[in-house]
Image (cartoon, helix red, strand yellow):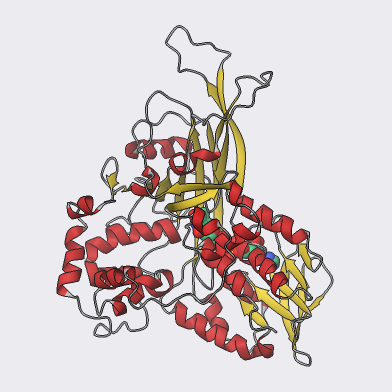
Length: 521
Ligand SMILES: Cc1cc2nc3c(=O)[nH]c(=O)nc-3n(C[C@H](O)[C@H](O)[C@H](O)COP(=O)(O)OP(=O)(O)OC[C@H]3O[C@@H](n4cnc5c(N)ncnc54)[C@H](O)[C@@H]3O)c2cc1C
């Protein structure tokens, strides 16, 4: 029997994706999605803004005060790029007919080839190797050769059979310096977290598995993986249309009007379905199981009591912990085991100049300082708690276009924008000051990495509290235990998914929505 009434808690990408897939899987079930904020999409948020600056590109003496450069520019306040390896997202794009809105960045593009590190205490940026030749002459060569040739002690010998931190894993295999410099920077870029507390098994399962696949060597495991040795084939089936073909040779992609395109298309589609109800501005305050018929009573801050037969929760696990009765037979402590990161996203737009102000590339990451992170109140003068900087114009410049000189002009320009946009990520393991960083300090620090920056024409700052969960060692096992307990509680009618449960990437979240409730009929 299909479920009578499914309630989805949370309207981020996991909740919206699950609403679409559940409505397709169970067309006769009523589906209600409850979202506490006044908008859907969770951390996905894009904005198209207009920017202007005086036109100074003419020779001195000929500068016309009335002439301005203007452009329409897309800013991302949350996620900005997707990788084509997530079939779940590609399927969504196909189902929502979004392929004409895509912006794809080929693997040969400079933003796919060039990534940089900014090593604390040094000026400028260090390019990471992007080809075999550059790898052979880079400082990465020796740690990797050492790992391949000398087979550092197997994890079982080291007593870390179940899990360990990313830092401990990389130090064990490639040495402490490699782990701090490259591992911590990578973790800053994806999780905005401290690599010393992030679970390698949860965050980088392929790396963890590579150690077993490579018979004790991660390097060999990765090589074998590349040739398909020991790879399990995915079990899910996807409706991809011609989208996979379009993604051949693509490194990353987004949408012409930003990542929120995906959310808007999902909401439009779901609002057109008779069996789906999307409700926003409603905060769920408790979930009570009803023993007799294995259903649930949901209390919200503003609506009458809500009765439902099945629940898919995409809420942060720590929020869910407060909603469930303490008497439930679930391992509730697992819901509170992980911290999450606060991140400040600062978008800057710079005016057109005659000089090139950014190197061609995706951006740069900043490793953990050698002395570790400062404690709250200690200040972090040097890099201002910066985790990394994304050169949005290089990868996503196709989102932006020049606007005609004056509003009286009727021609619609589609020429590329001459403005440069970039995004600074701050926070994570660094304490965040309650007030935004003063612009002067920000620009001073940025100029020590990127010396040719002019003054920006636009600065936007958003502080996201508890926005990216940090799965700590043991997370995978804890989630297996939680899911095992949920399978028997209330007849298995309550499931959990989303960034706090599986991976944090949009691909992981959309997949969690696709597989939600698969066992409910
Ligand atoms: C700054 C930033 C940059 C990122 N960059 C990338 C990137 O480039 N690529 C990538 O793949 N991923 C990226 N991510 C990660 C990715 O965006 C997130 O992991 C993903 O959006 C999480 O989706 P979710 O639906 O699981 O959770 P959320 O987006 O957190 O959605 C949960 C929803 O539940 C709602 N909610 C909470 N409590 C209640 C309640 N009591 N009642 C009702 N509703 C409630 C919230 O309002 C929210 O809308 C980034 C994340 C951040 C923060």
